[in-house]
Image (cartoon, rainbow, N blue to C red; front, side, top):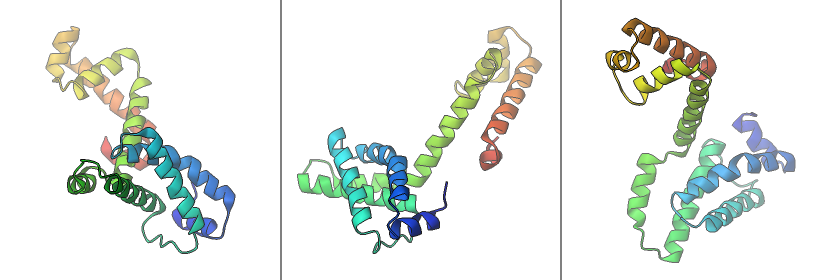
Amino acid sequence: MIDDILWIRLIQSGNQVVFEHLYRSYFTPLCRFISLYIENKTEAEEITAELFIYVWEHRENIDFSLSLKSYLFQSAKNRALNYLRNKKQKVSIDILKENSDEHYNSEEELEFKELQNLIKEAVCQLPTKCQTIFKKSREEHKSNQEIADEMNISIKTVEAHITAALKSIRKKLGEKYYYLF
């Protein structure tokens, strides 16, 4: 993907192709993010569309001091909170603000979801027995001994499968997440 500075410069100069790519890349994630605040999917989509219209119409004057992704998600959060304030919903705005800062750091949330998806894909590509052992170890939090007893195999076999699974996952995740496994 083009880095943020180049994206911003191209958008600010009026490059519609780059803006359309930005729209296609972020529309759905922003709708989902806004849906954390607003349960009405149609309203979430309208708010997201209005955000992109605003970005396009004010592209020359917007201060993108944050990353482009952070700017979009922070703007989406602000628009969702304004929507709630204007609609006088019974949701406590203060609680939403606290929760959003603590639990919904947009960049971290997206990266975490991306990582989860990559791990799930890597685990699904493991051989069946290796996949089963890995899931029992990591998802069900069973000890190697418990897995060995349950599957009627040796502890060394369990350890070998877990090692193979981790090696395979590490390889699939590549350099970006090498430090996790």
